[in-house]
Length: 278
Image (cartoon, rainbow, N blue to C red; front, top):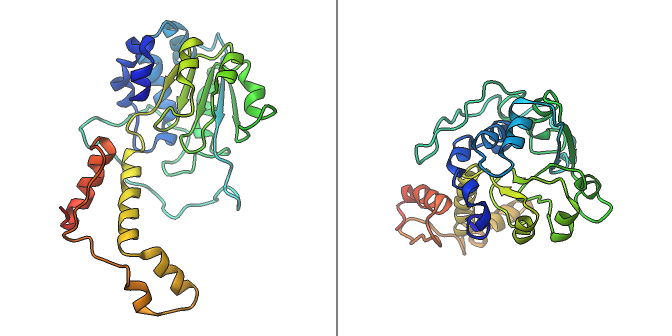
């Protein structure tokens, strides 16, 4: 929303955001390739033909995509997972359908939002003649990100591990066409500098709204039930019930409120309602 308000000269392109959103599932890092395809088709900026030909159909331009992702887990990339499969989500709560890509290069549920996972994009991009760079080194003038920014065409990063695109960086990135968030938000991009340098800024709208809402509900229950301190008492070898429950309450009958009720706020309220809250 911030991007829509401030990037006035990108209004024609942002008017196509619904078409982009419809190409995003609740697992954004697993289907970003599909998102990029949808972005290429839905884009109406002055670089429409370049973007469309480069990502969607042709490898003539051979563009460079720099992706900044979390480092791998400290104990290594997981050889297996707690679940053998994840639920199949076909629609968002508002009725919008999730992506239906013709093919994917990974198993749904794999950890793709890390350096080794590469968002599942390498094959998709390299088969089309593009250069794909993935790094977790993003801070400082000697970082891998800074080394590749000078000739990068697209930069992808994550909302909780952002590649900060400052005015200085954007001024040096003379080839940059778009700054893409593999998630929601654009706080890590200097939007005024992006407009000045004609860089499109976009996010994967709705992609992790449900994840955030579920996290909020978990935090509400944990705080009201005094779960974390109680857990620590048991972990330390204690079993004093009075210590645990002196600050523990039921949420039943409590008043639960959110500041605004957009996608996330409304999802939180819907999930708290079955607890018989007001």
